[in-house]
Image (cartoon, rainbow, N blue to C red):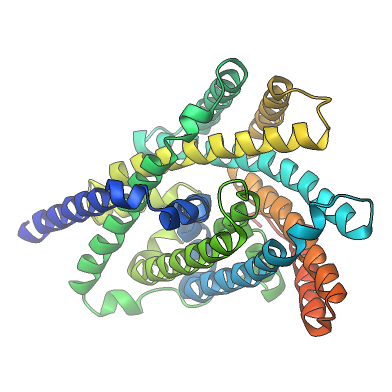
Length: 405
C-alpha cells in the first residue's frame, strides 16, 4: 500500500514539475524551442500511445529493436528533407516546369492528401482513447466522437478560422509532454521494484513470417512521422534554424521512444491478446490508477491540436495547389468529407496503415527531389543514397500492412 501511494506521488510530482518547466514563459518564448516544438509534438503525437500495443502484441521483446529501426529510418528520411531545406528550396522557389519543380509540386499534392488522412487518424485515436477511458464496449461510439470533432473543426474553420485554436498548440504540447515524462518516471520507479523474473517472462518470438513482419513495420511509419513539418515553416524560421530544430526534435523523440519501449518491457505480456490501438490505456492502469486519466488528457489535447494543425496545413496546400480555384471554406468541407468517409468506411488500424502509406509516398518524392539536387551539385554518391532511400519509401507506400495484418 505504501509503495502504491509513493507511485501516485511520484506520478503527480513529476507531471507538475515537467508542466511548470514547459509552460515557463522563458521557454515558451524561446525561438529555439518554438522552432522545435512543432516537429516534436507531431512526432510524439503521431503514435506514442499506439506504438506499444501494436508492436508488443506482434513482436514481443523485438519491439525495442523495431522502434529503433523505425527511428533510424525516420532519421535517414529527415536527412533528405534537411538537404532539401538547405539546397532545394532556393531552386524550387524559382518556379518553372523542369523535373525538379514537377516532383516538388507533386510531393505537395501528396502531402495535402496525407494531411486529409492524418486528420482522420488523429481524431480516430482521440475517439478511441475517450471510449477506452470510459470502459464502454461500443466501438461505434469512438467513430461518433471523432465525427463530431471533424464536423466541429470544419465548421469552425469555415466560420471563424482555426488560428486561435492553433495558438494553443504550445499548451497542449506541454500537457502531452508532461504526461509522457511523468509516465517514464513512474515506469522507471515501478521497474526498479520489480523482481527480475518480470523482465525474463516477456515473449521473445512471434508466429508471423519475416516478410509479413517487415511489411507490418512498413505500415507503422506513421508513428515516427511529423519531422517534415519544419520543411514548411520557412515563413517563421530560416533554413539553419529549421535544420537544427528537426535534428533536435528527431533525436529527443527517438530517445523518448527507445526509453519508453525499454521501460514497458515487463508489461509486454499484457498486450499479447490486445492489438487495439487504445489498448495501452487499459494496461497502464496496473502501474497507477491515475495514469490512464492523465495520459488520455494529454493525448486528447495533443490529438485535437494536431488535427487542427493538419486541417490548416491541408486547406492551405489545397488552395495553393488549385491556384485559388477553391476557397478555404470549400477546402475545409472537402477535408471533412474525406475524413468522415474514412472514419465510417475503415477502422483505426487501417487508417494507421493508410496514413503511413500516404506519408511514405510524400517522403519518396522528397527523396527524389534530394536525389535530383544532389546530382546537379555533382554529389553522385549522395544522389544514389537518396534514390535508394526514395525506393525504400515507395516500397513502404506499396507494401505496408495494417496492424491487423
